[in-house]
Image (cartoon, rainbow, N blue to C red):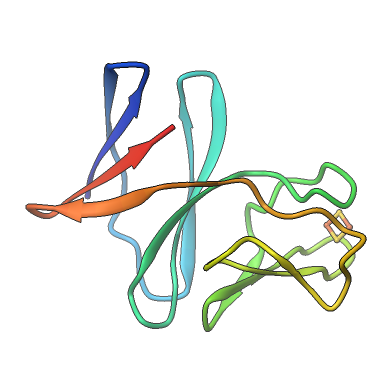
Length: 109
Ligand code: FES
């Protein structure tokens, strides 16, 4: 899968393995640790790769429906709006706009 990361008018091209439904892949671009996630309805999301609860990466977090679960303490976040489900005291995920254009995923930082 071809991934284009855009930041401040610059572009970085990244080749990643194709994402299966309810999986994620970690990406480094523009000195950021990102996670690209495909949910159950094949929507693709780009999020900062850390859990706001205790600064744990979300790599290997369980993806189900349109949510991701942190493997460390089990916080669940909506991929749609970044909210932590069931515990408002945990902050939200940082999300970046992602879209698919001509088969390539475009993420804007
Ligand atoms: S570090 Fe993610 S839930 Fe605690």
